[in-house]
Image (cartoon, rainbow, N blue to C red; front, side):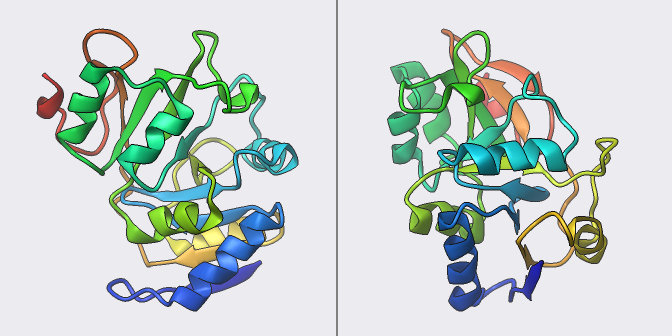
Length: 203
């Protein structure tokens, strides 16, 4: 695994560029978000997505969310109602995963049985920059042990995934609280999981 420590306020663009190159070549990376470290790859590279299932010891019945660099990009990958757009616009970016009806261009392996997908726009410049530079959304699933326990220490993450992941961008310890999941596929917001972030904005 390539391992790079980023400056928290002025992250080195050359390291982000290296990560983007790995993503473009079908690799798997670990990267910081505004909540926890995420495992990621290009959502359109099926082999890379399958690698993440193997790394996380998950079956394909466990669905992964993905991140976009900006709210305006979400409409390319999901059907966004006026209600959903107004709800998301309240926060712009942050520790939330939005459940929305899937658009046709999203790979079917990322659809739920209800034909929805989970999309994030994290309040983290590095994570958004990765997706922006790649030109495609990237998978966003928490870096955990094979038992599903979150790992907070980047050096511990490095040791655990050293042989299975291609590159890691480190920014030190993160909050350790996963994103909240908010279902905006209907006419009102439904809180699926209460995690980071103020949920009162959706009521």
